[in-house]
Length: 258
Image 1 (cartoon, rainbow, N blue to C red):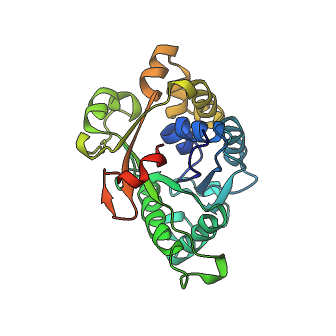
Image 2: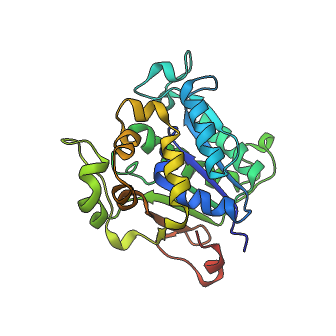
């Protein structure tokens, strides 16, 4: 069965693999259109090349880079604005163009906290994506980017409080705050063990993050059982865009399972 088409939007190279690598691999393996837009880092940088390798492993097509600078790494996009400093209309318009080109049934991005670590770029990616999803469905918004298209579901990658208690000390460095949502808010819990090998390979393709001891590096140091514990489940807050209600799926959209 071919699953619904999917477009994921994440802040940095490696976010796609860590937050939704299993879902991306599952959709791609079914033959569904699957793509990823990344807000930061520029073509020609090492992390852009690593992203290309990770997306190849996941089957999610070539990188689609907005090319802004990581808020904490100016050399990520020399001469470009930091993502959070760009006039809001600009990244929204650029993302609308990708939505109208790909015409996804489902979109995936960070939750409003920006995931467990609450990185400002993650939070801003959430804002830009929510605005772009709305704008893409309005034919008088950015008409130069193509015909209007409204995805049917928006999934926000998140961690429920129960998982944050169990996993947060490994996923977020000691002494830093963690951000999670009530378990009841989670509308989709996806067991991605059938695609876990691809997900792990994609995470480890981000070699610069492995080398500097960021989360992919900590995952690289774990045994198989530890990797599975961290990565085998993906959680999402789900919005049915026909009603806008969180954590619910109308009967008409039951076929749009992640």
